[in-house]
Image (tube, rainbow, N blue to C red; front, side):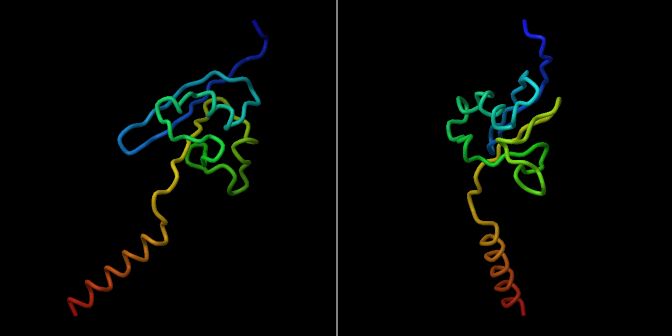
Length: 110
């Protein structure tokens, strides 16, 4: 047995009707991307592409706000890697349509 003390982390993925969290024992220095690949979540969620998926740690997106990218971010004990689904619609477009609909409703009332 190795003298390296392993750490416990979680990897999470969610779809609208199904979600799963996998607990893993990994070596210190394991990156978020490495843990995601080790999770095996692609077996239950075949659409996951670990190389292109956005990831975060407890809601903080990796690769933004000074955080390292998933392939560089080394995990700490208790971290939860979240694999994010791609956006199905453009948030700006959704807001534009909502504003146009509200404007039409206001014009009908006034």
